[in-house]
Image (cartoon, rainbow, N blue to C red; front, side):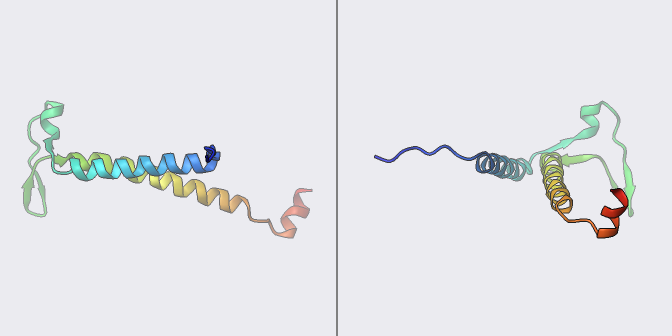
Length: 100
């Protein structure tokens, strides 16, 4: 019989975040076909925006909202990793002497 080995904290966190990102991406892709009108939700009349000669309203895909969250969390993850990597660098000697 084999024993069940508990996951390490890093492994568990990695699997949790990976499953969150994959689920979020799938929901964004599947929900991307649903179109809604932002003006109707907000209760305002259609804006009739003229963008490069094309008149359009604020009709959006549900996937637009979900992908924003996905990329924001991804960017935050990358920035935290970069901050950790940068903080591990050793300072120049003149800086250490000046602070001591």
